Image (cartoon, rainbow, N blue to C red; front, side, top):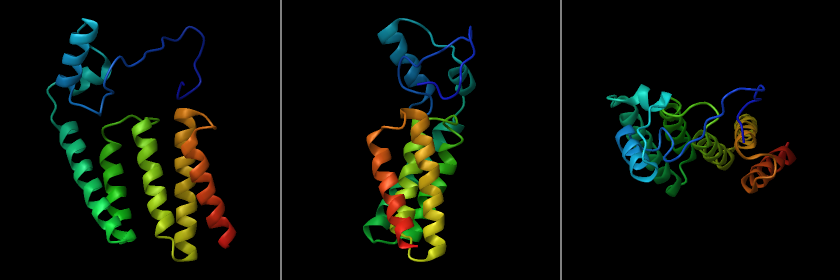
Length: 162
């Protein structure tokens, strides 16, 4: 799937291996060299070459996600939501808009917000978050993706409470 409309004659690129953001550039380049026998010089690899900033952001997002998981175990939804939102902020600096990684993180945040929707105001915020997650996943996978059914069901539940 393309994340946007493509004009005729425009070059279309694809990822041959670990997507930028999932692994450090050195790992990605080694994997591509080993499997496909070429030295990657894509924009993402060139941008990251020698940079430790993205790796620190990935690690920070992982730590925040773990803190969110622990808050979920305590059913402390406001804390889990705050940690998950902070992790997404970090990942937005790593992954491009339209990334599947960001779409799944948005879906995770929307589910947390659904769980923590104890007031009408929180329900409205959760509904909006679910809408963003649905839009992000549709962009990545199309309208029939299995995860979308669940998110739309959560939206219906919130809307039926009003």
